[in-house]
Length: 122
Image (tube, rainbow, N blue to C red):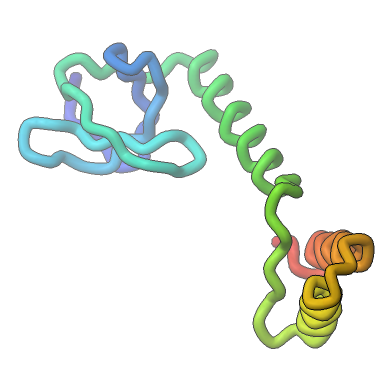
C-alpha cells in the first residue's frame, strides 16, 4: 500500500475491521475504529483502502454505538457544570437517594436526561 494519510479509512484483514489510519509506531500502522475508540496496531503491508460498502458499514456501526451510548439509561445522567436546572435536578436526585425514595430518584433522572437532550445535546 502507498503512503497513508492520517484519517484514511483502511481495511485490516487481521481483525476484519475498518480503521482510521492515525500514524506509524515502529513497524506498525496505528488504526482507530471509525467513530473513535481504542487504537490497534496493524501490519501496514496487509492494509488496503476500505471499499465503499465497508466504509458505509463502519459508519453505520459507529452511529449505532453513539445512539446506544446516548440512550444508555443504566447510568444516571451527570449534571452539566454551571447549569442551574441540572444542579437542581441532581440535588433533587441526591435528596431522594438519601431518603431511599427510588421513585423520586428515577423521576429526577428522567427529568435530567430529558433536560440534557433538550438543552445540552450538541
